[in-house]
Amino acid sequence: MRQFKTESKKLLDLMINSIYTNKEIFLRELISNASDAVDKLNFKSLQDPSVKLDQGDLAIRVSFDKDARTITISDNGIGMTAEELERNLGTIAHSGSEEFKTENAEQQGSDVDIIGQFGVGFYSAFMVASHVKVVSRAYGEDTAHVWESDGLEGYTIEDGERAEHGTDVILTLRENEKLDADGEAETYDRFLTEWGLKSLIQQYSNYVRYPIQMMVSKSRQKPKPEDAPDDYKPEYEDYQELETINSMTPIWKKRSSDVEQKDYNEFYKSTFHDFDEPARTISFHAEGTLEYDALLFVPGRAPFDLYSKDYEKGLALYSSNVLIMEKCDDLLPDYYNFVRGVVDSADVTLNISRETLQQNRQLKAIAKRVEKKITADLEDMRDNDREAYEKFFENFGRGLKYGIYSSYGMKADELADLLLFWSAKEQKMITLAEYAKACPRARRQSTMPPAIRASVWPRCPS
Image 1 (cartoon, rainbow, N blue to C red):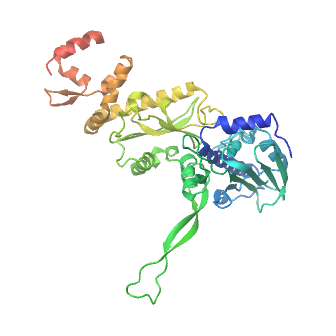
Image 2 (cartoon, rainbow, N blue to C red; image 1 turned 180 degrees about the horizontal axis):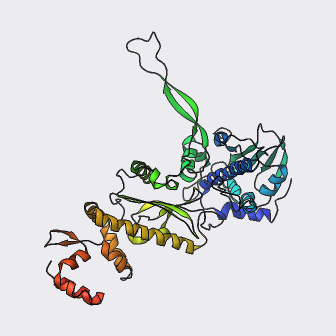
Image 3 (tube, helix red, strand yellow; image 1 turned 45 degrees about the vertical axis):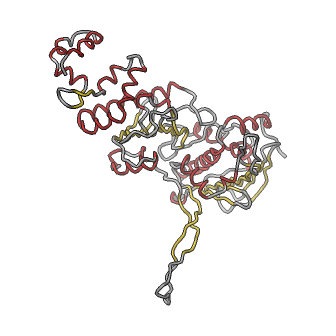
């Protein structure tokens, strides 16, 4: 029995029980590791002509055995030697992926997108597993090696067998916990279902660049017998089929000119569970010190709970196509809380669990640009599609007014031009600028300070 490097027992206990707050992210971490392994082999094939690789064969496969209580995540990536198993899995917080990125920083391009950086994601497996077995065969090697551990005392490394290069991570899940005093218990069985695994893949790893495949159960109609009677009723049979679960290419990474509005609408409705199409779609890519992609939507109607205390604002935050936070509220000001969408950046500095961010200034820079884009798009809708803007203001105008109140007027310059007011004279909704233009007294007072000018406007006949 080999011992983990560092104060392993204490550190591993800390890893399992403190770093991550959500047990279900174990699958996200292991799939990300598998993606990195495939990426490394892909990179090797680009650098070494002797490495013959069929890009179409690169994939990650997830399977489960309910009776044996196991989940297996397999890849056909670069694999690991016994020494690499010792270094990468036996040394807690040693990141082979981060080491790879550092060594090949100048040569990596869009063909390689390494996700890992801390060397701790693998150990999230012990949050749900009582035993972890890793079978790996390095590319170009004839022998596979097996790493095993219960996450308590240490680990073993022995020779093993694997038909081809790549890695299998086999988790033996813990038994379900008994009910506590509050009547709650952790049920690990939820991870041993086809639906449970598919939903986790689609939630956290839907845009990993390689296919994530699973054998799924389907039903089909049996062929009708030639001698079937007139009252024959169709018969059905169940069968298994290998299916790609993830979408791979995120729509926000595509050029807006290459995406039709109907595709954006479909993404919006399926992702944010809305029956109506969005009123506006905002897509942009930012480069510079901080590089990121953003895809934002202004809903066509207000959510039923928008003005309730239970409503949660925020944009989905991704890093290297992997979901980090489902609703990052720091990316939106309160008065734009109705906006839905996605921000994806590999440059944001995550904390060790990849569940929160380390540097708030990065988030502030993104939020500032997002706010400007939303404001500019609303101004464009106000000026060029007034009917749609009036409908938008009917749904969300209260929040814009609140933005001025809650900021004690600090946001008045940015938001005042977005407000609409009913004009009894014109019999329609107008902006303050349109009111001032139509009011001779306000035009004469246009050089006055805003506070004095505001006191003059109400005296103008509307």
